[in-house]
Length: 124
Image 1: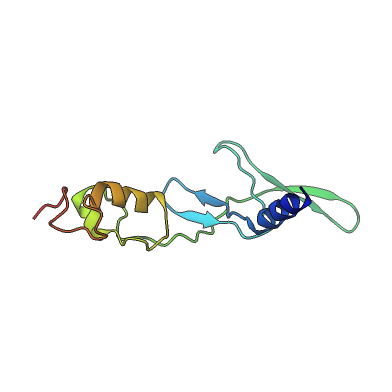
Image 2 (image 1 turned 90 degrees about the vertical axis):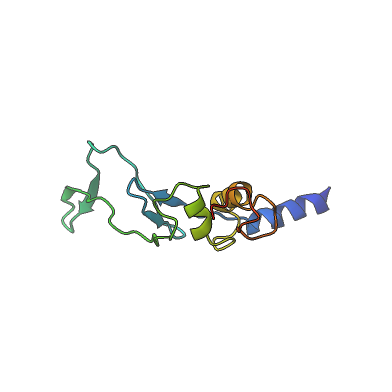
């Protein structure tokens, strides 16, 4: 029983995940370790507290986060699974993602690892 507990602790220590914020314009921001986010609606303001040396406290409106780390892709603006999207998509470029799974199901219909005239959706 102790060995099982030790193994589960070791495996849980190695597991981590990144938090990615997806904006309406298609851009994204990936939070780094220890970075915190606060989400509010469009109409509400977020305040930042500032304490002065003499203990006076000021609350200032926090500006929306402007940083983004999104890199545009050749498939942006294309309908996933369409002929144009299948041609532009680079398989395994992002690892195993929803996009890769879509490409495998909708584009590479004969499961040979390429999208070409032998696949069902190919438009010559």
